[in-house]
Image 1 (cartoon, rainbow, N blue to C red):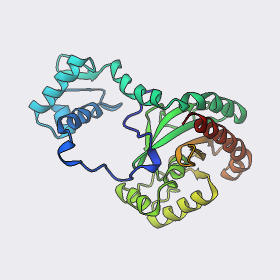
Image 2: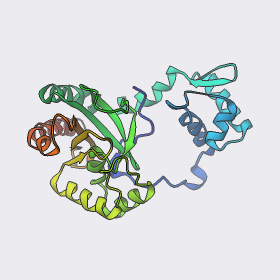
Image 3: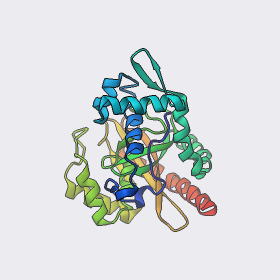
Image 4: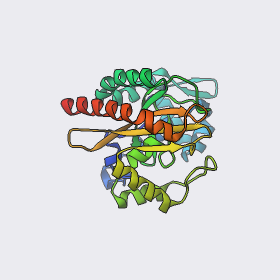
Amino acid sequence: MSPVPSASPGGPAGQAGPPEKPGDSYVQSFARGLSVIRAFNAEHPEQTLTDVAAATGLTRAGARRILLTLQTLGYVESEGRLFRLTPKILDLGFAYLTSMPFWNLAEPIMEDLSAQVHESCSAAVLDRTEIVYVLRVPTHKIMTINLSIGSRLPAYCTSMGRVLLSALDNAALGTALDLVPLHAHTPRTVTDRDELKRIIEQVRAQGWAIVDQELEDGLISISAPIRNRQGRIIAAMNISGNAQRTSAKQMVKTFLNPLQQAAQRVSSLVSQRT
């Protein structure tokens, strides 16, 4: 799994929109360095200087200075004209995970839950309009997407995303939904903003969410919130199943109670540590 990229521990309670540049305190060179790091991903693990400059909007000279700095620090290596990240970049993601020690507390609970229901179990936090996976206990391969720690998915069409979005007030929720194009991943995907707001309001009221094949055909997911001592939603936990094995109605009947119990156990442990 790749490191968790730029997911805020505050997650759902933070601002839905992009952070504003705080005037003179904004360090542009640092921001540009982060943009160079983010230019490397699964689709582009190796890039030339020209590729990086194009992906970040930097000049070739600016991209070169940042790449050489990252190379000197050990975060980037080069072979000929190609640059790639090194394993040292994992330190940045693991710094986030180790700063939030309750993930270690949640993992055995999620493993127990997965063993109990015989389905995959994951946990994620909100980063603006996306969910970022911070824990995953896979069982069956039910998605064409390869998910791992640090993987990102759109929040509006995932059950964990809707749980996390339900923690936003109405103004922040509207902003979050306005920031992202609502793409129909399947014929079932809800892309009407007003309908999404209604669904998320229902999630807020009932305390859990289920998404039936809106992200990918055959994938059903049910999620519950993880809360801190103040009752604020800081993460979401889910169970994912295959529509060929179980319906959405059956998932609610069979999995909701053990999922909520597991999420409550994690929330209780979080409350003792925070």
